[in-house]
Amino acid sequence: MIHVRHTDLGRIAEEHTSRLLDWITERIDCAIMLMVDMRPEAPHPSGLTLQSHLLHTLSRGPATALLRKCYPVPSGIASQKLIAHVLENIPPQPSFASNAGVIHTLLQNVRNNLKDLLRSRPDVLEQLDHDLGLTYKGMGWEEEAKGLLEFIFDYEAWTEPGEWATTTLKWGPQDLIRRIGLRTCPYCNRAYIYSVSRRKGNVEVRADLDHFFDKAEHPLLGLSFYNLVPSCTTCNSRLKARTPFTLDQYMHPYVEGFDDDAVFRVGKHASALDPQQLLEDPESIGVHIENRVDAANPKRAKINSHIELFCLEKFYKGHCDVVADAIVRYRMYTPELVRALISSFGRGVLTEKYVRRVLWGNYTDIEDLHRRPLAKLTRDVLNDLGFTWKD
Image (cartoon, rainbow, N blue to C red; front, side, top):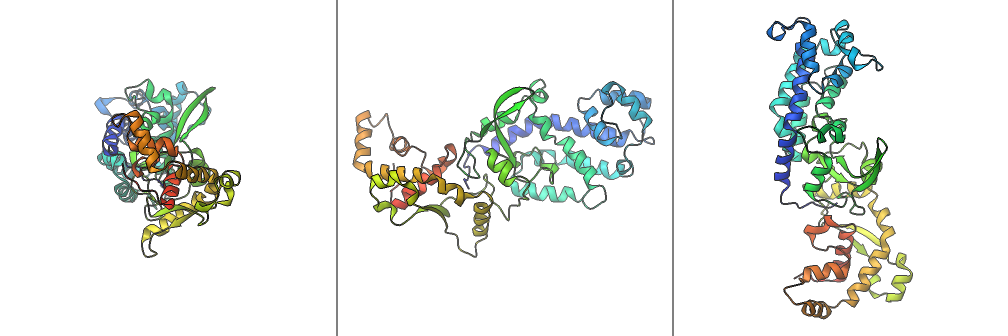
């Protein structure tokens, strides 16, 4: 819905990439050692015995988690007994043992394209995911390959404070969100992105990150910057959830938005209603979304899909009071009054842009709509009333 017009997105994507690169590369190296080097027929470095090689491998932080994922390890086995158990059960699960060559090719391809997977824009990500997916999709071991990639691009591990805060990573989800500076959900512009969650008995205020391309189906993109969209819990978990998204069907907030192609409109009679009637019965106003895009333009279908999936028509009918307030304010704050307010403080102190934000109770410039809930509704209603936007 909201196009996030952040001038530094590319720079933040580069920072995100540089912060995560070594952390993910370590997981790729670990996967290569365990999936390829530990086969009975594989040569081991420096003449190490298999047990010594395994001990060396397990000294790498993420190795234990991968062993549990890819070897037939009972869930209850203690970490200290893991080495002995794995040694008794080599080779790994049949699908991994029989596809070691393909696994190695896949992991090398991931390593070679890692920077692009982390920093590329959505259209490039979509193509990369398709091209690299040809290595394992439809080959009979797709689910196992997804599990391996989920380990490498482990979003859950990245969101655990202990995983990044005590290592050289020093870059977690909340750091990313703060750098972007997005406060409201770009899918609905109704709510702030922050919610409350409990982790290990602690109450945390944190923001949701939606995976535009579902990470379960696209594990290669689990930590890609342009696949991580700050959003509200309702849109992320309850409405979008596991819905398959493509750039042909839905709008990516970092690429495009409704802008003035789809706008909130009020009933024709609204501007003529008595202020007291507006405030006493705001539901009488009526709010709907007008899709202005020509039927032949693909964006029209994307807008309609977005409106339907995120229930925008239904949700915004509950915000008629905001519309009523905007109409009353529009009548009260004439251009002459705005100029008088600016003059009373001194023209160098207050800009007309700031005064408008105070008077309308919201941001109204198109590049600022992501800063506060219901900003687009406010802007569109004022447009509908004939407000002229100029400083």
